[in-house]
Length: 159
Image 1 (cartoon, rainbow, N blue to C red):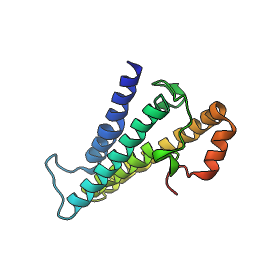
Image 2 (spheres, one colour):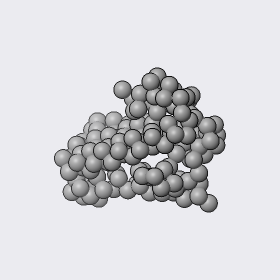
Image 3 (tube, one colour):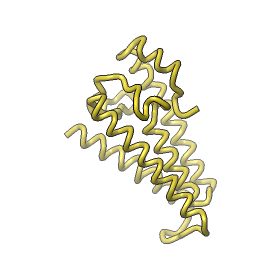
């Protein structure tokens, strides 16, 4: 049940909630559609971002035997048992977040980079970066030198 709760909460917050907040902040009407080619670019980014996040979640569930969601030191789902360093984790220590950021950039393009929506995205990036720093301390405690070596090899996000 805790696994399902974590996935449902992740979907509600990152896939539905933050984009809905960006939409609301943009002031765009509900049935608004941008001029071409923005819908195509936005859709490609959104689908690619979700695909990356889903790949990372499935990979972590299968290989890590757990779930990543640890919100500000409150465990929402069982932690992974193994340090993830392969698959999507070989190019980013946080591929789920990279995927969510790419998805959100697609939403921003759909909204044509409205400043209020951009502010919502910026706040999300700040809060999640603080969360990631907290998570990194826990991972160092859980996996020790193996995680420290991994941190030196692989960037936090994608740069």
